[in-house]
Structure formats: structure tokens, C-alpha cells
Amino acid sequence: MKKITRIAALLLALSFGLSLAACKGGNASGLTRVTLVLDYVPNTNHTGFYAAQKLGYYASEGLDVNIIEPADNSVTTLVATGKADFGVSFQEDVTYALTAEQPLPIKAIATIIQHNTSGFASLKSENIANPKDFEGKTYAGWGSPSEQAVVQAVMKSSGADPSKLNFVTSDSLDYTALLGSADLLWIFWAWDGIAAQHAGLDLNYLELRSIDERLDYYTPVIIASDGLLADKPDLARKFLAATSKGYQYCIDEPAKAADILQEHVDKAYDLSMLVDSQKYLAGKYAEGAARWGEMKSEVWDNYTAFMVENGLIDKAIPASDCYTNEFLPSAPTK
Image 1 (cartoon, rainbow, N blue to C red):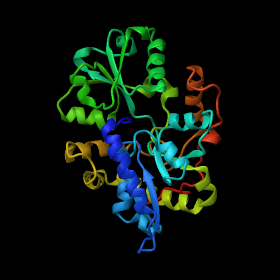
Image 2 (cartoon, rainbow, N blue to C red):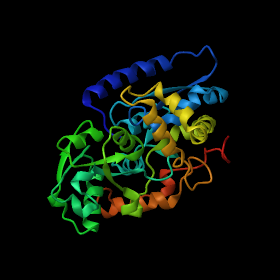
Image 3 (cartoon, rainbow, N blue to C red):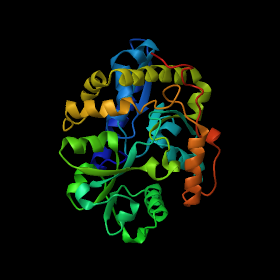
Image 4 (tube, helix red, strand yellow):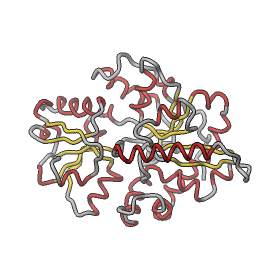
């Protein structure tokens, strides 16, 4: 769920700029204007935001939240520079941002899903049952260093030769790429996996966390800037209180939550697909956690170690520099 086409990115960037300009005006309702930028076009990972907006949870906290689609993988920069108050990102992107030559002042403040629900998908007819079977196949991806490192690492751990996998890069990827030249994709099951099933495709699926426990990292996460957290801590608490209620609604009422999301998604995804996706995620949002959004240091440390081991970053960064649970509601919010 990480890439959009370049043309779409330009259109979204223009739309984003206009929306931000509009947000700087006054609000007759007296609510505090807040901007949230997504990581991708709207999908079931984001339903809790739309539920909180639709059901008045944000308004109850005194917030008017404007949900913006991304201008192509620039979420961390937009948040760090104050052009967005909150953003949806990924653990690896936060780690990159904090270990860059010029680190960005951001921090993860909640995880949307407790475990990594992404993995490698292929048509069953390709007979790809494990990473050893990647040899001789064509993998289509978005071309990031961390993506290639993960693919190569899981192949090596299975005794496969990564040089025998053909990597191709694409601006726009979904399950339909498996009907073209690609034999293998990295997908989020809740979206492309379930959409593929609804399209009648029979897939083999290798979930990342089943291959290497260090790959069970947080994806996606909600981020904010250090400046906002220091200067406006109550804003962060109010935003997460309402967002937590939104995701709890998705957990308790997945079919109704899918109805809310349908107003915002591409019309190619029908309601039955959205309902199935939402039901799948209902059991994942807070799986094994005391409350939605809570993160653990060991998860951050495990993936940081993987990144260091594979040369993606030069040295480890403490988990406490990357995330905080401080702004989450103290107990599950119903």
C-alpha cells in the first residue's frame, strides 16, 4: 500500500496544497482545525479515522480533522515541517527519518495494527510455497532499499540465491499485476489479498512475520512532530482519544465501519469486499494488546536490528527515540 502513480501524486500534491490553504482560515464552529495526511489512498487501514470523523468523535474532542491523501511518500517530511499535524507512516520510514544525515523531528504515537499483516503473494499456479521458490521468478515492487533487503534476506535464510530473482519496479501495484508479467508481489492481505479473492484469484500467501519474527514490525503507524508533542500535548491526546474510539468502532462493528469507508474509496472496491476486509482487520487492530495503538520496544528493537544487519542503517537507534505511548488513552475507549 505504499505507492501511487506519479500523475496521481501530482494531482494529490495540488489538492493537498489547496486543502492546507483552506485549513488556515477560521472555523465558525469553534473547533480546532487539524490536518491528517494518509500514507496511501483510503483503504481499510484508515477506517478508524473516517469513523471518528463521521460519528462525531473528533468533534466531541473539539477537533475538525481534515483527512488528506498523500503527495507521494512525503508524509514524514510534511509532518516534520508542520505542514500536517499528524500522518500515517511505517516503522521503517520513521527509523530512516530519525537516522538520516539530517534527522527529522518526528515520533510514532500509535500503531494502527498490532502485527505486520503484509506478505508475499503469488498465483497458486506459480507453485511458490516458500522463499526458496522465488528463484527464477519476477518480483514487482516499489523499489525501496528496505524492500529489496527484506526480499533478499528471506531468500538467503531459506538457502535461496537472491541474484536468481528478477526485480522490476512499478509506480502502481495491486493484485492485478499478478495477471501480467509479475509472478510475485508484496501485499497487505486485508486489501489486495481479499480483493484478489473477490476477483476469483487463487493465491499462495507467505506472511512476513511467519518467515522472520523480526519482520513483525508496526505498519502502519501514526506520527507527529516533536514540536507538536512538546507544544500541544493536549491536541495529541484529544486526537488519539477520538481516533481510538474510531478504531474500537471498527473492531465492534466492522460491517457498519465498511459502510462509512465506502464513501471515500475507489468505486472499484465494492461493499462486500470492504466488509470482508474490515472483518479481517477487526481481529488485527488490537490483537494481543491491552489497548488499541500501544507499541512495544522489542518490536522496534527487533526490526532496527534487522535494518542494521542488512546495511539499511549504520547503527541502531533506541526504541524510546522512535515511539511513545504517552498520548494514548489510559484504557480502552468505548
